[in-house]
Image (cartoon, rainbow, N blue to C red):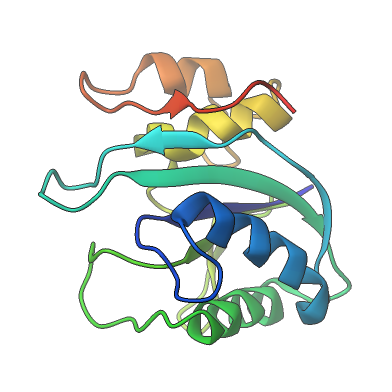
Length: 167
């Protein structure tokens, strides 16, 4: 299975508020050779690191593609750019954030391509909780830890609350 994390905390002039932006991004995955198999429910989470930025809407989608991991990551970054994202400052507010978090359990650490699994995913409730919605038996490809154990190990204050019922 291939999993992509989605997040947004700024509105878009055409697509509206962050949740609407994420829904539109999922609709446009097909233009990037990505087929959405299913998505987790949306979650609300505070900005990281803590700041006065607006809160985020986050989720995870399972996708299928004939592309390889590097091509997929490139497609995700191109879609972000189409939505107006400019990668200038780390942890800046953003209209769209798309991260390739797992690719069939593969471990990749290439200099030119994606790092898989995503190197900070195990530290983020806004990734782990929606991923658990889709794959409750998922295990971290490097550590072998179960997703439930990773969620239980999150530090206090690392939260993400669902904003809709399960899909």
